[in-house]
Length: 407
Ligand SMILES: *Cc1c(COP(=O)(O)O)cnc(C)c1O
Image 1 (cartoon, protein in one colour):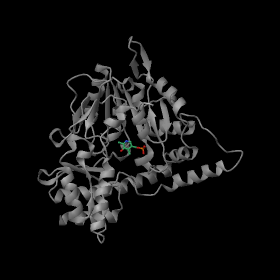
Image 2 (cartoon, helix red, strand yellow):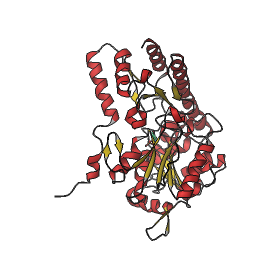
Image 3 (cartoon, helix red, strand yellow):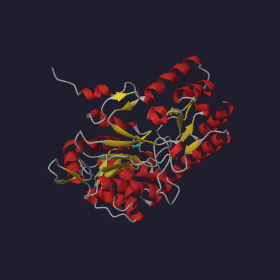
Image 4 (cartoon, helix red, strand yellow):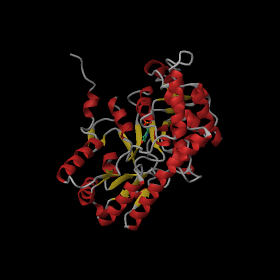
């Protein structure tokens, strides 16, 4: 009989959003007249920008004609998109990348999960807590996380981010090999200043660690002082891999496109102390395991960099950020301690009276038919908080805020 990868069996049972769905279904059965509004969804709701849709139509038409039909594309992405990325996302910030340092993918989630397979299973990992669950679970799956006990993995270094430290993680007091950072942060909606990010880059350089930097929400940054890319920090080209996605930037959660940046200077060591380029390894890995992103999706992504496409996608982001502003204002006035929501589409809110996250989830659902995401679902330091997203319709957000006031 084949033996199973037992590390999968160590993963905690049911997934956060499945738990939420179960409770919401139970509520709906007993309250059939109440319209439930979800502020818990991590998915966008606004339609694609017209310029993006037009590019997709055009690409589909090309696929319909023998002369312009495309089969397998280059595994690492078409040049038209890699060049648009280089110019649109990096050169404008004074960052020079080589085309070969950009790997187009079908969304950031798979790469943030898969990147760790370039490194041996026995490397040590640090991650911020609370955290996007993909980083933790993907490391657990190859045995790097140890055992899951009392809501924590035994072999992971947790970097607590709470109101007490202003959601700024402290450097670990020991060396680690891999560090996951996500800014603007999901779930807390908070950001890191250049000075704070510089501490991490310097730590990684000192310790020869690799930083996995998830920039999926960089387009939501409003404050001009906040870095959009870790490569704005000197030395990051030697120690950081960066993930981008069009999912939140341009509403591509159903279209699927993103990219990963691996500068050629990022190295890891062999056991006998030889340097190996992670860029070359990832290229090898992708050539074997990935067959490229759809041509239509890549044309759609390219369209986000045109003048029109850029303007239109910015409008949608402004819409979500106005939702966030309304929510922040209402909840702050109602006496809640609200974090995030200024440079990110997420608000991270302290539960009133020290209530635990799930208790507050039920109170909110049964009190006024609203759904939030319990903070503890993102890690132990999320206990006592809940997350709200600003991805809903304006009318829903406004009604939800009215209901909040009655709670
Ligand atoms: C939504 C999200 C992504 C993007 O995922 P895609 O696979 O590109 O849709 C990446 N990282 C974080 C933290 C996210 O919340």
